[in-house]
Length: 277
Image (cartoon, rainbow, N blue to C red; front, side, top):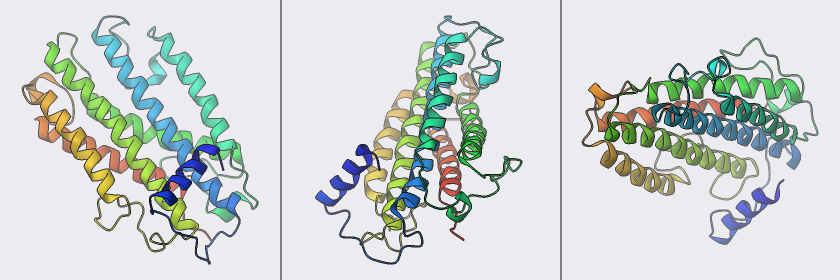
């Protein structure tokens, strides 16, 4: 386990979130449990990169710093349309993704950890080794995340007034922040459940909206604070008329971002923590 995750678990002990481990986990080897956690964190990290880069692309496009023809929601078009900075950063992100997945040092075959056929729409990938696991993570993350950012950002009009631009930028930041935190708490919860920490034995770690979730209060408070910021930023904007996003008003934009994040983080969770055979 990395030092960072060691500090997280140690901090959780310190505040009473995790008590001494109980016995009887499905996967008995710590490295096997950590492999699934590292896969989940690799997926979350790549998703965060995509939301940030797409948001940066839109910001630069609206400010006239990159060609207007760039389709910010589709990184595969960036090179052909002159957004080379985005292409260079994406290539670095792919190297980083591969390195993160490669930190999985499972003691058993990946199939024994629940990894087999990559979930739809990436079913053509069969997970047999670290490289194919990386390919599956990339495919799943890019499919869901790029769909989410396209719905939230739409295709901003270059003639947008400043308040609309700020609203759209904030919606993108809200997407990134909620994805970052919801995915983090899902992953921490599931790792704690896998090592049978007291209070997590029967936790449904994927459903952070359930009041029984161990991190429900912390995540709810965080989200409420971020929701209020987005509502204030977009309250005086004609969301339906000035934005091409997935909502007709500020409240709808808040709900849309939440729905997109919840759908994607749930997919990443299911990918990284499948049932163990």
